[in-house]
Length: 189
Image (cartoon, rainbow, N blue to C red; front, side, top):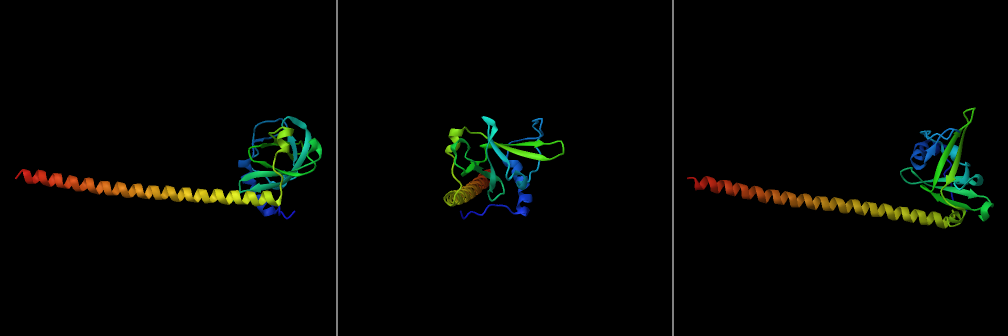
C-alpha cells in the first residue's frame, strides 16, 4: 500500500491537543470521568481496540490516526485481527464512533483502550483503509472546503448587497426628511 501514515514525533506533540477534542474520554483505572486533558498520538498508536458490546475481547489495535487541516481527529485506522471474521484488515473508524478509555496503573503508566460503538456485524461494513479510500476522503474534504468557501462568499455577497440597500434606503429617507423639513420651514414663511 502506498499510504504514508502520520508518524512524525513533532506532529504527535502538536496533535496531542487535537486528540482531546476528538475523543470521548475517561481516566484512571477506577473509571472516573476525568479527562487527561492532553494526549500523545504516540501513546494512542497501538492501543488495543474493543467493541463496546464485548469489552473483554480485543478486536485489533490503532494503526494510524487521521487528522483534518485543523489538526482535529477525523478517524482512526484500526488494524483488526482475524477475530470476528474480519480477516486482518485495516478499517476506518470515524470520530464519533469510538471512545478512548484511559487507565493509570500504580506506577503512573498510562494505558489507552479504544472502545468502538458498533456491533460485530456493523464493523464488517466499515470502510477499508486503502489508496482508494484515501483518494475519496481527500476529494470529499476538498469538496467540503469548496462548499464552505462558496457559502462564505455567498454570505459575504448577501451581506454586502443588504448593506448597500440599507445605505440607499437611508439616503432616500434622509432626502425625504430634508425635503419635509425644508417644506415645513418654507410653509411657515
